[in-house]
Length: 151
Image (cartoon, rainbow, N blue to C red; front, side, top):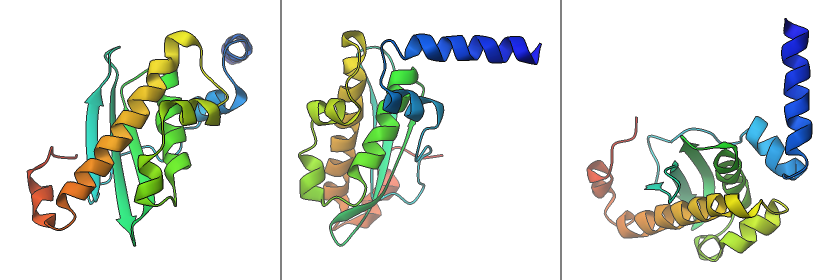
């Protein structure tokens, strides 16, 4: 039975390679920075047009994003985009992170099929909202207590 499952999984991966880059498949199979930080400096949660929800949390030090994590209930493309945005933004200044666009993420991952490009937009929009949340409360950290609870 294990051999049948393994063969089926290999066939599925081979089929995915027709539409998705190696990087997208790798981040789908092995997502980076999964989970939400309870002590985040910035946090956002957005539900996209397809119904997938993404959460992103960031920690900032000396105006640089030192840690970025994500969580999603979404499809493989959404998982990949969430994972890749956390890698793409790591170590960037807030100013540089704010400039990241959907096109930047699509270029980083070697593209997505047309029907999945909205997943990149969801990841970028959630990141931008987490940065906005950070900027709104950085001088008044007590406001963290009043945003959506993170479990």
